[in-house]
Picture (cartoon, helix red, strand yellow):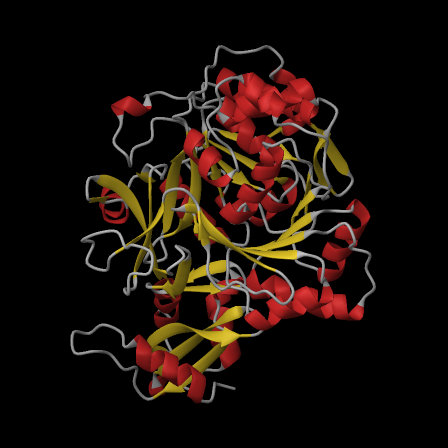
Length: 539
């Protein structure tokens, strides 16, 4: 059955329901016809500047990319259009976490080497010292209502679109890449490269279609809008938005850079949304508090989906008590695996396992075989079939994470799990040095490296500790240099936030005489986690 490009699916929908709202973000509503035209013009403009595909997929190894890359430093507004416009131009859209510090963004851009950067003006001001990167010959500025000027040498999105009216000779391919940047095992950036036809099918509720008629036929009357609360710069938020958009469903995009539960619930009430997404405890806890405090008409809401981080059971129960008519959907997946599975809970009927999507597997711990339902073993959560090509420009990591097992190429998530007798997945957690705090991944070795650079710190380990507010919070165990004088919590926190995004900075610093390490010099994280829950922090 033929594979489809994401841009072609959008255009097919726009042909049938051109005036249907596609996205709503604050006071901006974009119809399908407007999005189809905007993405067409952006593609033509980029192609006219020489951007596109220079080597086809068949000529490349899995970690190689033959297409130009465009970095997106953006809030949610117009994010879907910029992604699809890039794909129509056969260039690779690359997400950039705008919570990063300029140093971190510079590091990411040095790795990705984008030929262009599309940015919201307010974020351009934040990253002015590192934009444009040496690789970029084009900056496109999007007006976000801020009073800051465009970066020197930028062209406005409006002018770029005006120059893109004449159609260029572009034939996008299902093989063209969509890149999702996440952190690596040492905290360094890694770009997960998906064929667009695969990520459409696996994570955007898409499929291969026999003809355009099949796409047209699945478009019914518009239902209640979906509400993508989480940032689209993260895979979970982008996949939610695109799962709606590419099925003819209006999606509301959260229009503030900061999570505000009152604003979220007021938006849900005003737009009469049917489904809403959130990110673990960092969203669930304040939403519960606001629902208890406020008076909102959410009678249109039938589902609340959570993903990107774990949601504590007590928050799940509270949400179901406060919104007794909804279904709570726990999604599970990662940038590397796509959407692996989901669990559906209702008031009085909680599910703690995940129904697996096509291709999801559990691999035995020794990689010898794939587990059967009910097999008494904890293995590795994996996926076969439609999986990413690999990590951009990283052969070793690609071969390690995407090995061939029993004749099939698979992706191994790093999470541990087992299969219940009914075939559902029981998840046991991530087997790596990653802390998920408020929906953001923190790689502890990156934070440790920064801490150890402080003149008053001899050694440091960083771990996660359970937190009602964040799901997990970052805690540092530090051995201090007695010759340096007093080192306070505030001094270490300021040192971290000068080089790292604020969410990566430890919430607490615990001073010890010596950081415990194993005989081979490796960190004793079991000791560190015990210390984090039992010792007194620095004042």
